[in-house]
Length: 265
Image (cartoon, rainbow, N blue to C red):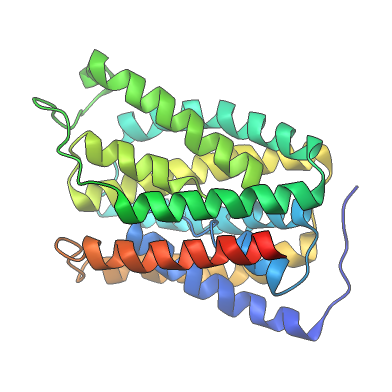
């Protein structure tokens, strides 16, 4: 079924939420979907499965605009990005199917546990040295055989997380790209494109399951599109090198706090 929400006054905050998340997401290498489901569930009392589908739909404008802007600035590696995306599509469809089998309360609790584990892991994650001898490929044939397992495994995981929880699946993508020794801005731009593909695949799965609310998508997506347009432009004058440590701890703390709130709910 297609959900149709009555227009609530507090929904007017959704474009603002979308703008802030879209702006920051395209500057750190994602689409912001990680923050949408908890906000919709905790602040707007949206049914969990609808929140998942709405999150994936709302970040599609972020992915389209963010990918285009990063591509114009040569921040995207297409061979690796499309390879990740192919694996992510399979994972996203699987995740969407599994989410339909889980009751809403279990889905919320499972997502909360995932948040806590992800936050603690990110906080304690050691610096990756990367794979020796790896160069950024210009074509698909330049992708080395020893890099393929990383691309397939992390692509599947990121897609499955997107389809199941409505999040971006950014963390596995960023981890893999850093292991593969991508420059920071190339990591950011390529991951924006990869999680966009994940969102498209996950949302298509939820459409087939009938868990879509067009009104929520409109309010959230309109603000997200504007933020995604501005984010890559600000990144031109932003130097991410040297700041990833403090940003990682702030992100980790927020993620753990959201997870605890979802579990207690």
